[in-house]
Image 1 (cartoon, helix red, strand yellow):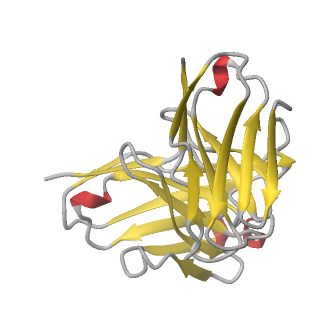
Image 2 (tube, chains in turn cyan, orange; image 1 turned 180 degrees about the horizontal axis):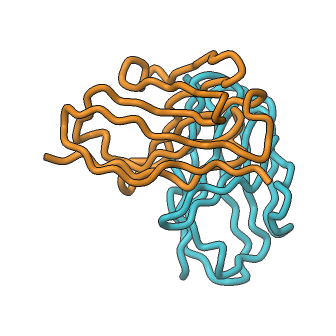
Image 3 (cartoon, one colour; image 1 turned 180 degrees about the vertical axis):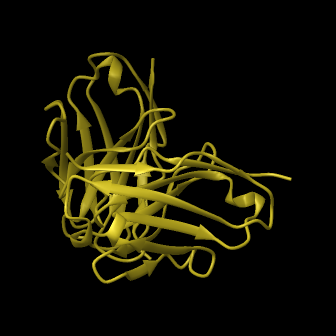
Length: 107
Length: 115
């Protein structure tokens, strides 16, 4: 199985801060990686696909980068509605595996 | 507009059976995989398996193989997740999602198993 190591597991940040979350794959997955945002009591919502492509309708302050084994999600200027938990997913191989999640909290 | 609408919350006793559903609309149901994802209380996301409704090809995570059954009825554009004998540890939110990279998600079905 491909292990996805996501870090940090949580972070505290202020509105306007730049935030970066990383995912490391235990083996190369090309760019077969997506990022999701989940708010309490809601279904996950895809933000980024193919490692760096912005999902339609998602604000441009979200961006993704990486390929192979190292990936990152960046929020350029954190907004109040961005406080949530974020997950990466590799869809290169079976079984599909998610990162452990990063909870972004208000400082 | 792609929509996945899941069946409502369920409360069951250990040992009971259950089948929850996910109805797809707004796209060609037979041309895209549908997957199921478990989220236990306060925990992360776990992939359970996929089905391709066009030919019922099914893939399971080893963690869930033999524990659940995934099926689909393409005539009513609905996918299913089924248990034959529930355990308390099956208590969780279950999501369906389209395609193998989960581009659209259902709203979730909360399953509570308690005696």
